[in-house]
Image: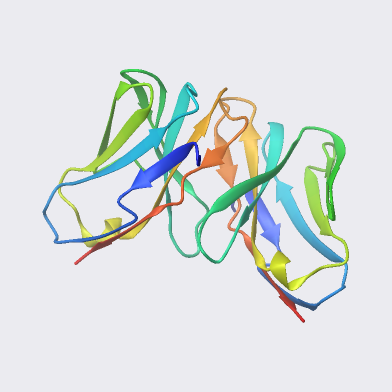
Length: 112
Length: 109
């Protein structure tokens, strides 16, 4: 009954490989977001979506792409993983832009 | 200079103490969020406020729009309040959230 789930929870991958993280929601919220969290930084927005097939870049979008083919799923792809992309990734959903955040449990990604 | 600054970065207190965490911002905002991140990593939204004061249990959040400052207070603190508390300002020009770096709170029994 979490309303939002992320998968996988943990992943270790090699430099240069593509990686896809999944965010799934059951709340039918319009807005979905991908953030990364690194020590010493606040959460930083990677990409967000404001509807099916409607996405936009955040402040740290280089090296990442997203897709939203269904309301409930928002995928984050690292096209060619680098060590600088080692981070904890959080998905969030809101019913309106900027209000009413619900966060997923996070995905810890390690690129070796 | 970051657009959202939190203080202190780290705070250790004894159980029962009154806790204050501060958040200052330098941009125009339409709302300010307070969130809690537990050691397990999950992030929970505590408050969203655009003026005045909100209270939920032992947590109180205030905001002064003129001074561009918000505070989160915890009364009768308990070890289970140990967490990272994050403020995030919703910029009024583009409705993007600007996140503070967080305050790590440890309450000792």
